[in-house]
View 1 (cartoon, rainbow, N blue to C red):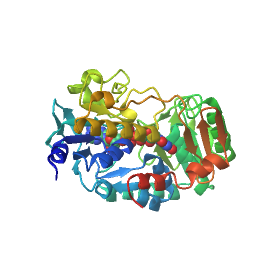
View 2: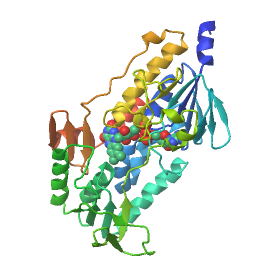
View 3: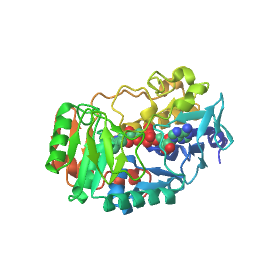
View 4: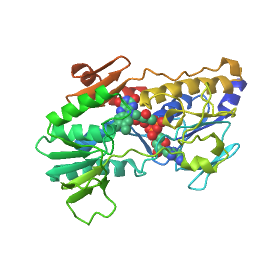
Length: 361
Ligand SMILES: Cc1cc2nc3c(=O)[nH]c(=O)nc-3n(C[C@H](O)[C@H](O)[C@H](O)COP(=O)(O)OP(=O)(O)OC[C@H]3O[C@@H](n4cnc5c(N)ncnc54)[C@H](O)[C@@H]3O)c2cc1C
């Protein structure tokens, strides 16, 4: 190996978070650096495939992917990062991992188990829960609650589904047209959607099938699913040397090269960044591509001026699935449901495309 190549490989890159953004950048830097991925789980999962896996557990066989399957030349540390020091990351299991370049991609905190086997079991038990319930309460009218309601309404049309949302319309991150089309579809599938109220879950009696809401309604359901969104995984950062880089909403402030403002060798990508754009996985993957390129330039001794910049987009596309046979898409100047968005997302949920990106069949 040439001396120059040796010194490139000696550069240590640490990626925190093996989600949509972190897994892709780890994969793309594994042969050009000494790469370590830190993630509390031994797998990467495609988040938007989870709702399908709850009604069809075998779907998760392809959407929950061992990190070792795509990271064949990197180190995998299955633990949480709990501290960032000047040149090392400390993990919950007591390790200190040195870095020359650090990428923070911790996105959202998920309460998922450490092993893939346990995660697949969860999908099976969600499926059994759905199958054995005649009536199901879904709490939350964001993308997770809506997509779950769509999957259940499509695959189990005989079940009574009630969706309770504390806002005045569904899918608040999208425009009112998308919300209206979604509501119309759910109503056409006999999903009972209730707005402007919260379900009281704090003192629910064991085995109770009656749920009270903040507006005094009683909803009867055999089971419930909580779909209220996952918190940003930045709480831990506030106590570290990067605490001042976390803004009021818990996001990391980045510059145009996606470096944390004021840092020479620490980057952030994905939902954890303060980039003013819709938080979408495909954009998180674009951040990964920019930062991978920038780190390659820096580790090979290139000038900082050569680094790529990222411009947040005001024209993000979002597609919300409504079961296997429908979807609502919001394009920059057009919102539509039916054949086009369905054919883009609903059948495979981008699982094939994502696996291909990870170099898998
Ligand atoms: C229902 C739903 C449908 C969606 N549909 C789409 C879609 O169709 N297309 C699309 O592009 N986007 C979609 N999205 C958005 C997309 O899922 C997110 O934008 C994307 O997951 C963000 O990726 P990320 O890597 O930044 O964060 P995440 O995917 O949240 O990954 C973060 C990773 O960091 C890990 N982590 C957290 N804390 C730590 C720590 N302290 N140390 C180490 N690791 C840590 C987590 O365990 C996780 O593995 C959807 C979202 C939802 C909820």
